[in-house]
Image (cartoon, rainbow, N blue to C red; front, side, top):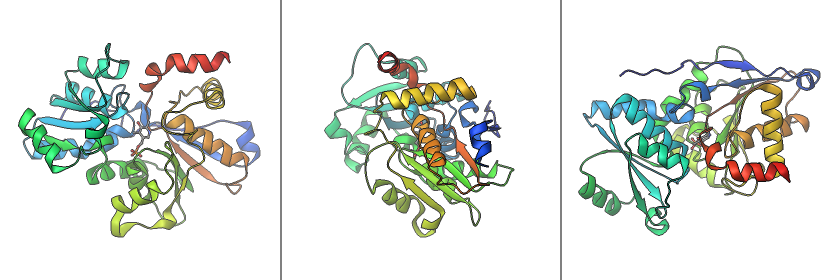
Length: 305
Ligand SMILES: *Cc1c(COP(=O)(O)O)cnc(C)c1O
């Protein structure tokens, strides 16, 4: 496979007097730089799935996502650049003109197919899978967000690549697969912190149970539900001001759906004294910057408030 990815992704220190004064070291694992179109944790989750797809001699990938999905975007681009067919099953009605995410996906050659919200709820049922097979022929089935067991293998590599000692590693959570992979690769005394990007108390605990099964060592991770800003893709002025401050100060852009909320949470926890002094913290930049375009008018409205 010709994979032009920036691996291992760079680990950068956040240079901050405020953090230095508290004796906190913060690093950012720049998975957003892995690839301009299929970087971030979506690449981590795709990698072993693409290897498996090839093993199965399958050249058509079918997957699922919302209309602004980073996963749909990444799969479409990977299909174009790595040479396989992609079908995107999109939640909800078709909305024309296509938003920036879907118009990019279509330009990569992804076939887009829409399921109503009620049908989409049953997208993983055998009857829906059968009818998709009748319609499109055989395919490699990748669940929403690319989150399955093989995804965890790729996410473990985020940790394997880190060659410094650290105490905490922080990641945004959408399905929890990335956090599950990361936490399962930690050594004693290391902890993964998950920042929920959506409002669903108890959901991530269940997800981690499902992903990790017998290996679910609950002492290896904690989930924070207080930094989802009211729900999935919900944003407010405080979040946007924080993200603007972060990019002005440290020259790293964050996305409003996942990494902005995670980093907001990391700084809030630091300032509240959650981390003992001397802590070394890694924040995973899981990508998602493509989503900025689709939210730009909403973001700009908040900036002038
Ligand atoms: C999809 C996504 C996540 C969520 O990852 P999960 O493995 O589903 O928890 C986090 N950050 C970004 C930027 C994403 O695109």
